[in-house]
Length: 241
Image 1: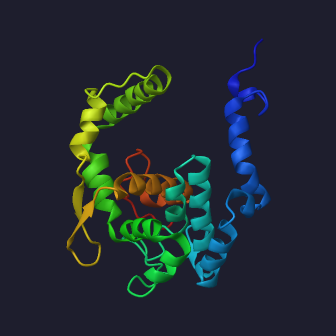
Image 2 (image 1 turned 120 degrees about the vertical axis):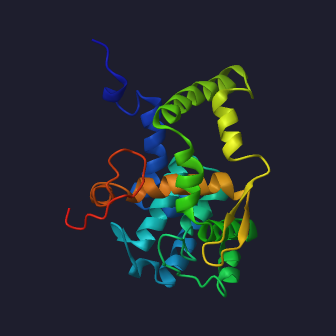
């Protein structure tokens, strides 16, 4: 009987082999082999107390490194990696863990990660995620429509890569463009209420949120918020579960 893909060893399964190769440096703590600047960036986060703040299932520092790991294993663009490592460094609309003061610490962060990455980090922190991810994006889809669009988009992207076929008129592409047009949208600043342009941060914000939720929404967190239907409505507050 032929082996199923899940029963193959990493050397026999290209996906498992790639996953193991990208994960091994993290498992071994060989941060310098991932990026020569990564150990020093982690040291900066540690020096400002990120390891002294509790966060979901560990310290805030653990969480920040986990997001970097997820993005690296997902093969995210290099420009997104510093944003993942510092993604809530100025606090955000969910939690107040400002390890850098947004009014005085931006120059410090900029010196470590560069101007472009720091701008993404700052925008990630000031854009409220709840209304953006849920009200403006997720809740624009019915469950059945989302499932169908995810299915056909996967096929479409495969055709684009393998056959160089690209159809701008596909329903799922039109839907995404109607929600996130090419010229961007504007959202409210989480503290000041003023409108903030939201264009280049769009994909980065979504990618960070996917990684963020993947790292921290599990087991007791889903029970606490009653996230049983997959829609991440955070409708519960069951402290005793």
